[in-house]
Length: 400
Ligand SMILES: Cc1cc2nc3c(=O)[nH]c(=O)nc-3n(C[C@H](O)[C@H](O)[C@H](O)COP(=O)(O)O)c2cc1C
Image (tube, rainbow, N blue to C red; front, side, top):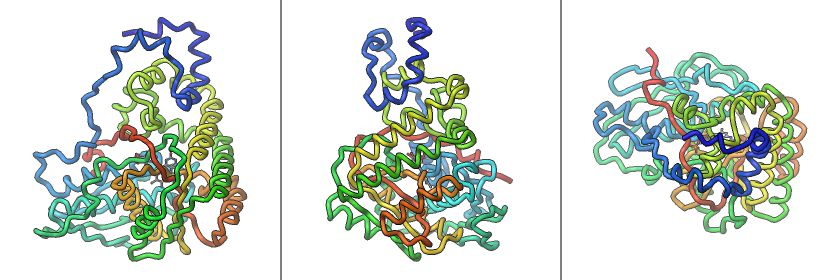
């Protein structure tokens, strides 16, 4: 169906400029609905990994990897390479082709995304009757400003019939980052206590959860200012736009990144935005309105949230980052189990020069030691689920 015909050129231009505003408003596109209502239930017949391992798959390595790829990771870059080392073992490396140098110049977040991968595969292994034995940085750890082509971890899968299944196993296929507006209600004390008990295994990570009205006000301002700083640079804009999936064709082609579905739009609304209001060509030509709308969305999502949380470490080695990733992933799975929504907002944590002043203000406002590293900052609350971000197929991760 070729519906663009029904819109004048002027309407299309105006609408593209306002596309994310429309997302925030729930979209005032009723006039279009009757014309395209038959597209509401488009079934693309593709789970993009979220149906778990192929039931015919016999290789335990492929089975755990089919779960691991579903973990949270920055911009859904999926920055992982797997080298098979034996019939029940493999090494995990950072994929140097899948970094975010403008927004994550020291690859700190990319290493957190290695930890989320390891946590997910380790939980999955228990569900499949295995223990995942993880040896971190088996060829030595590199400095936290460098990336060397050394493995982040060697993984050996040991068959352990009767191993207790991690209670989070049942949530691997439903966990997601929920980027919608929340309902402005704080977590209660019991919920916060449960989450506190879920962090900090063998490391010294500290989880902070805060729900005061003053904190809410401060976060709204700091997070909005941080996004304002983030979008004021063309390399950073390009990095985000490159990972934004403007339509289903791009989702199918790349199987990574994120699009309007992950912001909470589905069915007819998603169809309208992707087909009428948004195109890579127009945003590439003028990223300003994309950036402005990102700032507006940040303000709205922060304003809709009553509980914020962050994880700090006193040292900031590559291993610290990986272990934070493991804890962050566990918390995200636990909030899924509790029916809560969770969403990282990382801009103020980023290490490029323009952010440092605001980052210092953030730390001072919340009594965080200047020498500590805030590794993850995220919102918690309640909102309906959004569709999953796509994942590539496991064979795309495997090298030599
Ligand atoms: C280290 C890290 C930083 C992230 N930062 C952000 C962020 O600033 N804003 C955001 O919307 N999502 C952020 N995310 C969430 C990712 O976008 C999300 O995990 C990814 O798109 C995959 O989607 P899923 O978690 O729903 O499976 C971050 C995730 C990680 C692990």
